[in-house]
Length: 176
Image 1 (cartoon, rainbow, N blue to C red):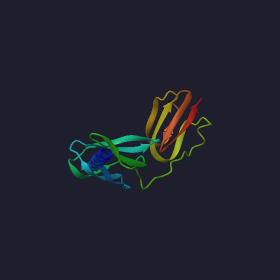
Image 2 (cartoon, rainbow, N blue to C red; image 1 turned 90 degrees about the vertical axis):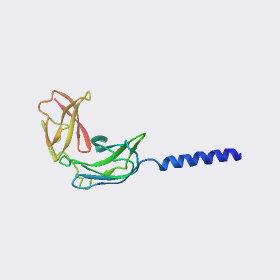
Image 3 (cartoon, helix red, strand yellow; image 1 turned 60 degrees about the vertical axis):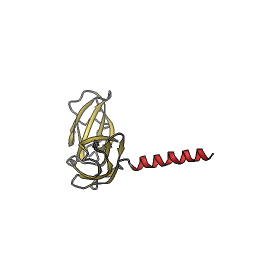
Image 4 (cartoon, rainbow, N blue to C red; image 1 turned 120 degrees about the vertical axis):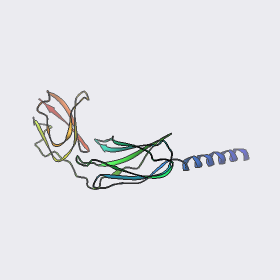
């Protein structure tokens, strides 16, 4: 029993040491201007930093940069806010992958459709209350429209069912 306890203590000590040597992403902030800042602890020399934005209920890569080196470091990335930004997180990749806690954009706006109900009537122009990123997919999952605007012209789409992702929302509409 004594050997068993010593063995467990050695494993626990090893795991605690390994955890304390892991890279940590700390102090992540996102300013109204789109400036993303963060710090790292226990960074290794070949760390890759990736900046992600949460869009349409999934994480979209918006930037990459090489780590600065061993130890503690600080980083800055300027995210494009011209088409709205909602939430960001940092992913650090070295011998493992670690994600920061997400941080919300301080000036979020609630994006809504302001044109008539395009889901039940044939509306070739979808109007949103703010300029934002959008994607339109056909019923097979192919992206047929994409952009950044507050107006989406669907008049050239053939008949069928479509999925419309905008801001941090999604819905379905039909062309008849």
